[in-house]
Length: 360
Picture 1: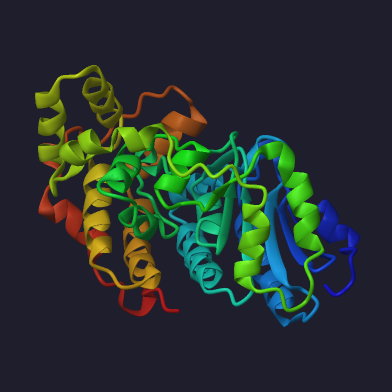
Picture 2 (picture 1 turned 180 degrees about the vertical axis):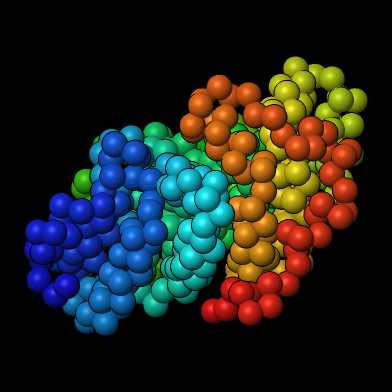
């Protein structure tokens, strides 16, 4: 990819990867699905990074999404559901390659800029929030809503959430609530809010940076367009969130919300009651373990273990059925209460996979 025009097949496909000036552009190109990412797209991103890393004319990477709805609505859940129904191995293959890619992005040697405009969820967070320069806008709607699918915040989400202030990460991970751009800054998922109408101008600047431009200089270019916002509505809620979610058992979180009784506490309780009890308990344990982890990779290893167990579970299939297949929004979770999630149920999510362990 040393010329500025990608091959036609690449341009017309689900992923566009080409050099524009001094920027290696990675554009997710499935706008009808809000750029939901497939296994082949993850492989395409990895291949593009190989080429951009080796190309001395590429100074930085720029990740963006096609269309005006968002960067990425997540992974291709329907394909995972179909494979799970058939007891296939798509989950095992896709998550392995995706998680290794997430770790690569976090350590990429050239500045990695992500335009997190519009909807950014799940796998889209994994492709963007581990980058060095994460740009959100007034249109950003960022979420890790996996617990509503009988899953948990993966793609390194437990690492990211565990580094949010106080219990903000616990709150977002368990409720799946949406972050605004400024919320994402406060939660440490992003670095700068740039007005969406300024992204094309910033994009032009980034494609014209000179060879030898450092990562700190790239940040300065971004900051020239930034609003300076560092906190959204959720920051003001932190004292209450810390009180409610500062527990290591879901039962205690429910009890704290119930005792509070305020309108906000009641609405939060209602949200949690819609989620998978097993998914919430797994998520909370992963988040607490992440706090004691020294690296993203440690968290990804745990997430891979848990993901393979989720893939085998009825809760995942039921969550996707209710949200994506039948769209009745009425999942029948098993078990139906957090009190009924036993240590025996939890153990397989955290068991060593032996030869199948994720290795970097």
